[in-house]
Structures are given as C-alpha cells and as structure tokens.
Amino acid sequence: MMDVQAFAERLFSRDDFLIITHARPDGDTAGSAYALCRGLRAAGKTAFILENPDMTARYVFLYQGLEPPPGFDAKTIVCVDIASPGMLHDTQRHYEDHIDFAVDHHTQTDLKARYVLADPGASAAGQLVYAVLKAYGSPLDAEMLKGLYIAVATDTGCFRYSNTSAPAHHIAAEAISAGVDIYALNRVFFEVISHAAYELKKRVLNDMEFFFDRRAAVIILPLDLIAGIGAGTDDLEGLSEMPTTIDGVLVGLTVKQTLDGNSRVSVRTIGAVDAAALCRGFGGGGHAAAAGCTINAGVDEAKRMMLDAIAPLLKTTI
Image (cartoon, rainbow, N blue to C red):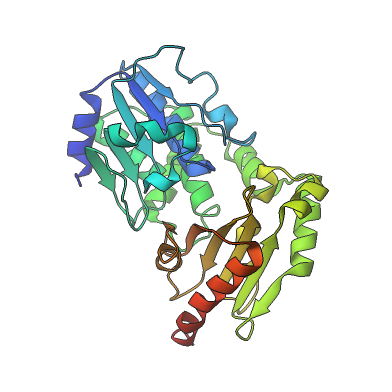
C-alpha cells in the first residue's frame, strides 16, 4: 500500500497508459476511469480506456473517443475500483498478472498490482482518483470533475448512503463551481427510468418476499421475467436498493439468474450486518453496506443458502 503523494508521483512518472474498468461497470469505475484518463492526458501522457463489453448505454459516453487505437502497446496498466481478479471481465483476464497500478476503496483488495492505493473509508474510487490528481498538482477541468462527480454520486446514492464523506461533498462542490451540470447528471442517474424499468419495479415490489420478522427481504430476478418485460442491464439499476428502503428491513437480497443457470446475488444492509463479510463467505466481496457474490446454484437454492447465512447475523443485531 502507498500514500497518495507517493502513488501520484510514481503514476505520473510512467506513460502509455491503459485504464481498466470492472465487469458490470457502475458509475464509480466508469467515472473514475474517465477522469483519470483525461487527467493523464492533460499532463502530456498517452492514455486510453480499455473497451468494456459490459458497458451500458448509461455509461458508454464516458469512454467513447478514449478507446485505444488498434495495435496500441500499453506500457502501464491501471485498474480503477477493482478489488479482486473476479471483478475483471473475461476479456480482461490476460492483464491480471500485468497490473501496474490499482486504485480501490473496497473493504478488502486482493488484486495483484505493483502499486496499490486503497482506502475502504473513501466514498468511491473517484475520491481517490481526485486525491491523486490533486497530489500531482493537476488542475481539474470540468470534464474531469464531471467524471468524478458521477463516481462519488453514484456510489453514495446521490449522497444518501452511509459511506458519504466530506471529501465526496467537496468534489461535488468543486464540480458545481467548474460549471458541471449536476442537475442533468442527477436526472440521468437518479430520476428518469425507462418504461421497462418501471414495469420491472412493479413486478419485483409485488413479488418481494420477507423473512425473519420482516428484517430481511428478497427480490428474485429470473431470466424469463427480465426477457418478458424487455429489460436491459440499465433497467436493473436501483433494484438492489429497493428492499432496504422498506422500514425495518436490515438485509436486502437481489438474486438474479445468470445465463449459465447460476445466481448473481447483490446484498444491501442497514446497521451492524456486514454485507462484504457475508459475501466473502461465498467467494464475493464489496463494501460493508453493499456487496455481491456469484453462487453456483439456481435462484431458489441461492436464496436458501443466503438466508441460512443471514439467520445467525440477524440474531445478533436485534
């Protein structure tokens, strides 16, 4: 692990950068990559963002025009918001043993990199990218701050979650001062939803199951439900947060069927239950209040396995 100043000096001593975002990208990994890429370019460096097959329409504008040209020979590989090799997309795995720099804020970082800047107390990886750019002395323009705003705003639920920090608000304030249209960004990321997302939310709210005296709630997302509604990846955003918005629910599970018949589980928690620790028991990880894992079982069996693991934890949080 390195401090911010040492990390920044080492990073900016290199060139020919390729920045990698994680599988199933969110606003933090996409916004952080965008800001870092532009910051490196402003310092006279050659930098690109690796195309991510999972990048959805909501985030794709954050790397359009920043993709590497054919035959680009990357000399420096940087990962943002990636805590473990399991978070790499299959198309990125050949970079796993060649990562030079990693910027991350998960509770546990297992990614092998030569230089690691990790702080689980940071609201988002974007907060650390901001600190690195500031430590190097780079002036941040409106485009960099737009990426950083998206990073911290999406990872804090528009500054509502318990991981919201004073530095996250400072980034937002600096973005506003630089002329970033945060109203437009907030509309895109937190307000407007598609008709498919609306239909999907109606269904999952109606079918949500409650356990342990309504202290746990479960959403099941089979593939036929998603396909029947015509929902895309962007339409699934925000579903994982729905269970814990209900009064009294301390643990929310969203269990999504994957194409191979297994289950991707997203966990959200309130209070003493550690979502990351819970998911690590199934080979996953994340943050104390938001984490995920993949279980090699169908959605019903995955639900049962997760509920069995949650039962003793809820007994200690009464």
